[in-house]
Amino acid sequence: MKRIIFFLLSGLFSFTVSFGQITGSAHDFSGQSWATGILCGVCHTPHNANGTVANAPLWNHEVTTSSYTLYSSPTLDATVNQPSASSKLCLSCHDGTVALENFGGVTTGTNFITGNALLGTDLSTEHPISFVYNTALATADGELYDPSTQNSGLGSTIANDLLFSGSLECASCHDVHNTQNNSYLLRIDNTGSALCLTCHNK
Image (tube, rainbow, N blue to C red; front, side, top):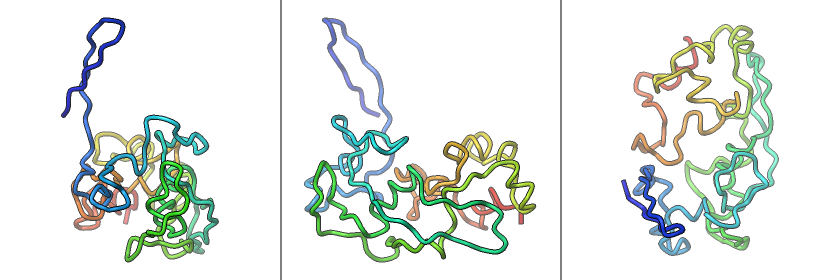
């Protein structure tokens, strides 16, 4: 916790700010030469943020313009859409089309994500994202819990804790700020498939 003190119109105001555990996580780029010691600024900025992506918190990184090959299956009852706002932000590094250091107006970076973290633009073998997960889908599927009533294990329902405007996105399962302090940035520990079984009833 850090205390930040502001002087405003000769009055003294203070408030406490809580920071996520990004330090030391896979998203801590402050030790990279191209980040020049910046921790939050690779993704966020307090000034001149990119306002073109819905629900993007003070966004500072170049956003991907890719189209994706989506997951499809004859047993899939959901309508999977092209990645939407929050997932598109994740893919702005993880699809490999935008350089890691393309932030703050830079568009000429040369360092791209590699290894297992590189998803590419073919998402057909990945868990589907950017689809509406609601009572109707759970009923039609028969093997999903109703997100409006099922407890997420995080304090409320799946709908309240894990969905974004009613949709399942990358951040439904992964915590970009790694507040759970695990190597895969999972929001729920997956021992015994616990994360999977939060939504899937088999």
